[in-house]
Length: 191
Image 1 (cartoon, one colour):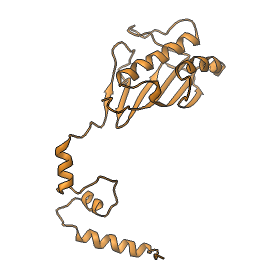
Image 2 (cartoon, one colour):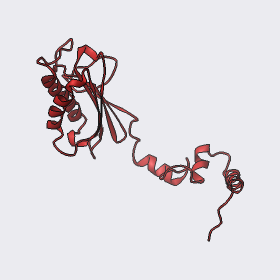
Image 3 (cartoon, rainbow, N blue to C red):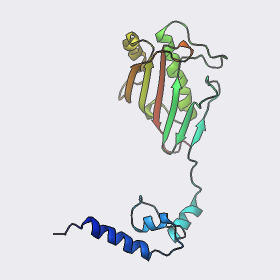
Image 4 (cartoon, rainbow, N blue to C red):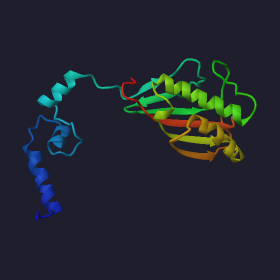
């Protein structure tokens, strides 16, 4: 049976390995050599690190997604892709291509449909679809609209809907009755 090492013994081992690391290496290199970082980490200057760097440029930390025709305010982007996730800003039922933003008329049903259609346009611009959505947050101006909203919402997610939160929010932008934001998993090859 293997003996469990004490905190002092573990600390002494870390210090011994750290002293063995040549001074020209970075703290990150030392941490990698200690196995403290994630898989695929290699000290700078090592053959593994240099080969990986030469093979491919690193992906940008974030990519802005702004499809044409989708109503947008200058204070946020329609979506941002970071790594394998796509974060869609809250969308309301604003008619595409209309400035200033004008909501779909007729109440919660047409406004919800337009909201979902606006999100669909952003998903499409990101190379994704409804099947890639993993989480939605719904803001309703009046929780009395909850059941009606759900009827329309389920048209877009007929089976296996994503995780979701729904809450009442007073004072949505442009006096909207509904706002929906989503997080989607970026499909392979969607960049």
